[in-house]
Amino acid sequence: MLKIKRIYDEREKDDGFRVLVDRLWPRGVSKEKAHLDLWLKEIAPTDALRKWFGHDPKRWVGFATKYKKELAARKELVQQIKKLEADHRSVTLLYAAHDASHNQAVVLQQVLKGSRAK
View 1 (cartoon, rainbow, N blue to C red):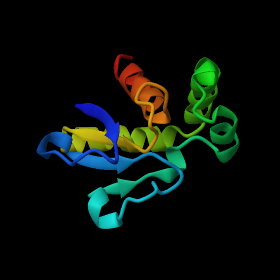
View 2: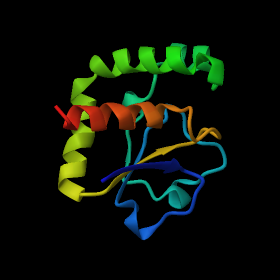
View 3: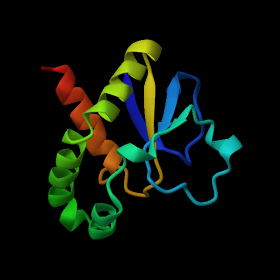
View 4: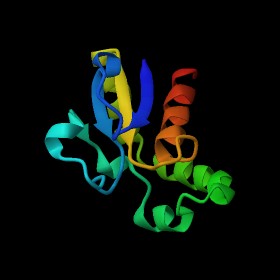
């Protein structure tokens, strides 16, 4: 099972293996409070794409398209998350953005679910 949630939300028992998919460490979160199993910052959008997007919902479609292209070039990292899911059954992708609908974890989850269907 692959889930996404804000890193600021409380850890739950069914989170399983917790992976932070942000390039920058979230403000105000200690390493202890994060309860991370892995910080996979290399899978996050590039700094240029992240800054261009700026969490502007008007740029969402463009961001998602560009980020999917970036992920296609990082297949080994996508495979790493799929392996974690196979090994741990439950993986939670963590992000810091305020917008639960417009962030990189949403796109990453779509890519991971889409690649399973093939």
